[in-house]
Length: 190
Image (cartoon, rainbow, N blue to C red):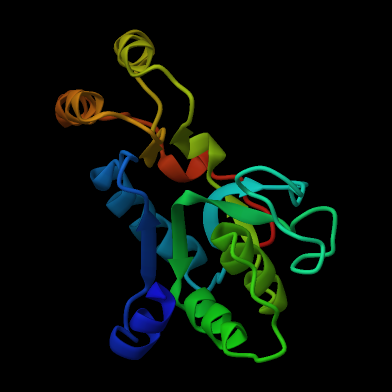
């Protein structure tokens, strides 16, 4: 578990950014965002992510979970796992909960780690949905950026192919949005 590695080996880090390999991360904006976030909300232990609410525990198909494993109808609020920013306070608290022998394991890791364990650790979530380019066509984004001055974002949509990742990176090197990135953060429970 990455959280254990961070707790054991990197106790002085401020954040852990968990990203899937098919997801574009706007690293210059991420650095700027984390600096601004730290200045304004440095003591927050909230997970920063695209939140999933009222997601049903599926009883058949690929994501099947038995009633014995997870009896509730819906998962607790959790993070879509393709991009999550964990503050160190959250990492420590979630890891501690994972070591509790009374916590029942759930194989759906996003719901388990950022939902069940985070809930037991009393860690809240802050949505970064407005800082994500989910389901946006990359070409349309670039056209709109040129016309409207762009919108700041941290993470591009998932499932991008290598060509789209390269195209987006090349574009962003020359096109920097002028907006304050924190203005797009959905501030709840900070």
